[in-house]
Length: 147
Image 1 (cartoon, rainbow, N blue to C red):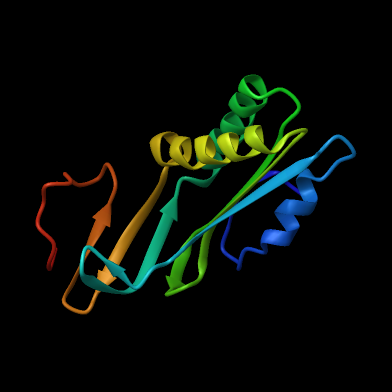
Image 2: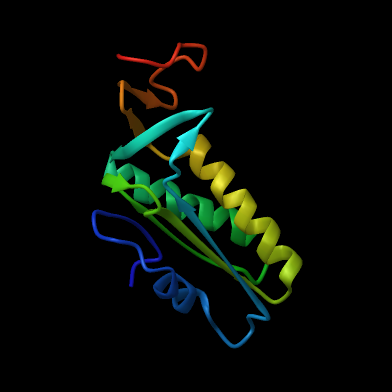
């Protein structure tokens, strides 16, 4: 299994947990990010994710390397889904194993924040009355509604 991947199929958190399990792992944290129905009071119908897959996978791997450097003994696996995702579907899975729980929690939180900063994956929110790309493509001050 690839530890760092962008996929079009449903994500299975157990697959990523198993990928980081090893004899020195005293803790494994698994984060799943889901499509939520409401954002800032606006009802989302679904999300559409796009990515520059080769670069996205390289950046996910880079995050894993950064984690291994900051928290020795950790192992990381990250999967991100692209395409159209419905409410409650999993968009991202991050699994981190570590000899101790504190490092696993800290590294997992670090991973999701770095993912949002450096990985070329873009999200379009589709609402009942409009849509908008979320991320660096648009200024965050732009009003919500039809684009």
